[in-house]
Length: 620
Ligand SMILES: Cc1ncc(C[n+]2csc(CCOP(=O)(O)OP(=O)(O)O)c2C)c(N)n1
Ligand SMILES: [Mg+2]
Image (cartoon, rainbow, N blue to C red; front, side):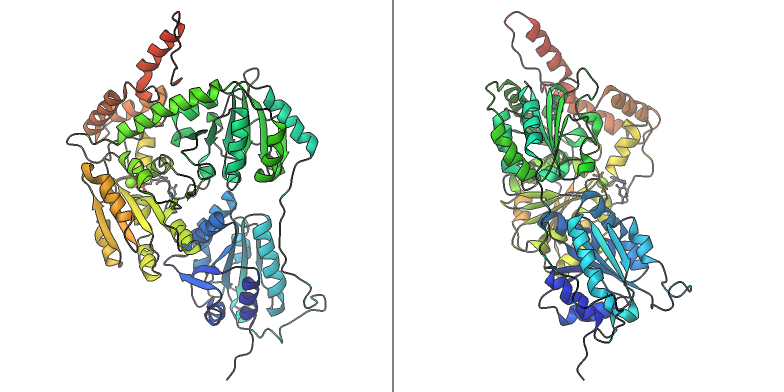
C-alpha cells in the first residue's frame, strides 16, 4: 500500500531544499516519524547515527563552524532533547548555525504529566536563537523555514519540537488555518554581509596611521579573511595575535603571526599586546580582557574594531572607531586607505622574539633522561606530522594549550569549543568535520578525562568508516583542574585523579586500530606513522602528569600558589618539584620562557649600557 506524504516527508524535503544534507542523531519513539522520512530520503540527506545526543549537537556545531552551513541534530523527546543542550549552547555561544529537531509527546496530551512530557520549546529556548513547537502538520513548512533562516541569519542553533502524532500526520489533509496560505513561505539565498560607511573607514585609517606600534588581534570572525588580514598587516607593519577561535584564520607560519594570547598563548604575543600603541580587533569577542592592552588612559592603545555584530563593538576594549561589517569586505576596503609604514621595528622585534619562542618550544619537546614523554612533545611533533589540509579539533584541559601550540600551516583548519569550553568536544567536532570533508585528514586532540566521557563515539568512527585520528594525551588526571587548584587557590589537588584506562584496548574493542606512544625517543616517528594510516586510529600518548604547562602568563602569584599547594600536602609534591626545577633550569637562557627572568634582566641592563641594543624578550 502506498504511503501518503507525511508532515515529516515535508520537513525532510524542505531541509533538502535548504541545502541541509546531514543529520547527526540518535532516534527514539518520540522521533520515529521523522526517522522514517529520513530513511526514505536517504539518497539526499545523510543520517549519522551517534551514541549520545550531546555528540550529535556538538558534531552539528562543528559542521556549521567548518562549513558555514547548518547541519541538523536530532533526538527523541525529553531525555534525548536534554542531552542535546551542551552542544546547542556551544553553537549559540560560538555562533555556529545548527538546526535541532526533537520529538515531543502527542499534541493533545501536552501538559498532562504524560510520558516524556516536557516543554521542549521552553527548555531549549535559552540555548537557541529560535525555539518553537510545531502545532500541526500545516505548521511544518513555515516553522522550518523560519528556523533555518534564523540559524543562518543569527549564526546559531534553532530548534523545532514536533509532537509524535504530527510527525506521521498526513501532509495534505493537515489542519491548515485560513491565515496559513499554502506556499507563502520561501527558501531563498541569504547573504547579510555588510560594509561600514566610507567615512567610518577613513576614521579608522586615520586612527591607525598615527600609531608607531600597531597590532592586529583576530578571532573567529576573521576566518575566511586571512589574506586580507595579512595584507593589512603588511601595510601597517603590524604583528598578528590570535584568539584561539581564530587560530586557523591566519597560519602560524605567517611572518606576521605571533600565535595565540592569554594562558594558551605565546610570550611574544603577550609582549606585543602589552607594548602596542594601536590595536585593530577583527572579529573577536574573546573574553580574556586582562591580557589585552591596558584600557586606561593615558597609556591606552588606539582601538579600531571590525565586527559584523553592532552590539560587540566596544565590548572588550574601549575602541575609538567601530567598523560594523563583514571582516573580509571591510578589510578589503580599509587596506587601500592605509599607508605603507616604513618603520618595521615593532614587527621585527616581535619576529625576533618568535625565533626565541620556537627554539624554546623545540627545547621543551626534547626527552629528559628517565622521565616520561613531556606533554610539549605532542604539539611539537604533531605540527610536523599534520598533513596539508588537515583539520585539527581541540578540547578543554591542558590539552587546550597543546592544541594552541600545534602550529598550523596555510590551508589547515582548527576549531574547538572556544567560549563554552566544553570538555569532550574534540571527538564530536572531528566527527562533524570528517562528515563535512570526507577527503581531508581530521585529527581530534583530546584528554583522557574528555575521552572517558564519550568512549562510545569511538564506535561511531568504526560504524561510519570515518578515518579520524584520535590523539588522547593520557596523564591519568584532570590535568588543568589540578594545576588550577594549586596555582590559583594554593591548594593541593583534590578529586582530579583518573583511574587508568587502557584506551588502546578500548579502541580495539570498538573496531579501531590502537597505538600507544610511551617512548620519548619515538614520538615523532610513531605519530607520523599513525596519522598517515588508513581508517580510524586511536593514538594514546602517555605523558608526564607532573609537568605543568609553562604558560607565558604565569606570574608570581601563581608561583606562590603552586608552592603553597605543595606545602599544604600535595600528594605528588616531590615529583612536581623535581620536574619543575628541571624545566626551569633547562629554560633559563630563553628570553621568552617564564624561567628566562635572568636573561631578560641581563638584556635590559645591556640595553641601558652605552652602545647596547639587546632585544628584551619579555616583561614578566
Ligand atoms: C563538560 C565539562 N566539565 C568540566 C569542565 C571543567 N574542566 C575543564 S578542563 C577539565 C579537565 C580535563 O581533563 P583531561 O581531559 O584529562 O585533560 P587534561 O587537563 O588532563 O589535559 C575539566 C574537568 C569542563 N570544561 N567541561
Ligand atoms: Mg588528563
